[in-house]
Image 1: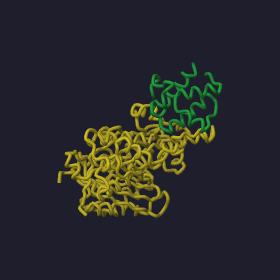
Image 2: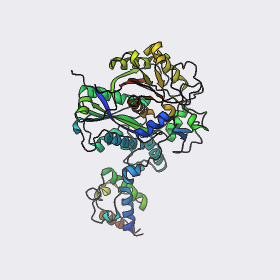
Image 3: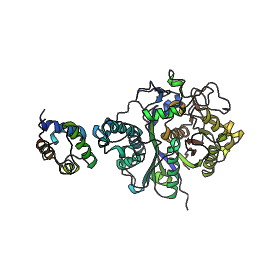
Image 4: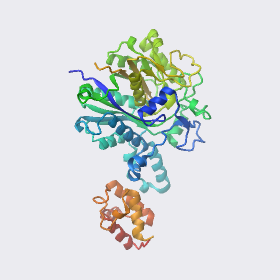
Length: 417
Length: 79
């Protein structure tokens, strides 16, 4: 089989730090936090009261009032981000063959807000008042189904659901699918709208969220810092156009970066806690490097999962050290952009993949903000405080999800050969 | 507000169409762009607004705006 290479030719981002890739990138490298006190609901009774919310998003302006009512917020994020990525790739006027365009999007909790709203109606008024749109709005695969309708994408189309690794998996299987010839173009990524009563309350109950920084929202997410006390939930969508290299070249597309490999593993250890020493994550990184023909000595940057929980950050650090070796791990830069955009759950992997591609393109590594006193065992160069210019060529991006799911994506700067 | 105006208002809100399009002859699917799910929701809105129950069999016959108005009048509803 000939080896089909895959490149990124368009980005679409809706995030707490910006509603375009450029805006998000500029805020990421400036270290501008998108975390605020929650306004999408009254957070008074919740232990965690801060989140990363998408600002100024008006679904009625995008879809009209009648249509906006018929799709959950997570689908709306996916639709807008996909359209923006599509246009950025130059497909608005010259779309590719629809039967060669796929959509693979991840979401951790899908239309959970719709579920809650309809549950309330059903409890108050009985089952006959459940909306006929309840099921199509709630199901996690509706984002990719709807994007296919919007963009007339008729090749493979499905949803990956692996909690916080969902969009990492979407990207990984999209890469494989283009390599296998199942499509030439795939919209890959994810979206999430989890700032709802039950999702927020559920993660609070798990003791997974930051609770000690409610009065200082922008400081709440502090990956690798000794005072980190949990992740900060956020929402949004991030979509990448993955395209077979010769297809992209033939139409003169602008290439953002090349996606060269993926590694997918499972801890098989615990439903929420990472395996001892991050051994599942270690194997995902090793597999991604192997898949992408990358020597650990050539890795320049890792966009870490870096959630700002006690367990994740120290175990991921151990995983990086054991995957790359002591010397390489201490040489490279590692940062968690969650420190500015929070944890977009099912959209985290593609959001961070988008920022990783932009880091390679621009030769700038975004910082980990709020890292002042490294926590015990957090011994790497996490690019604290401010961005760093660096001629980076190879980068990894990690996504780890409840259920023990681990995905590492490997990217290379695209230099034209 | 007349029965006709109240029905028009409900349809405009639900389907995002213009009031001028909501004529008695207008067919929900072919003229007003509704799909089968929209039609189910519309019937629920009529039930709420006029405090009555519409059976599935009755709903199946209500394919135009005029049919809805006639149906409501036959049920003794004037506003």
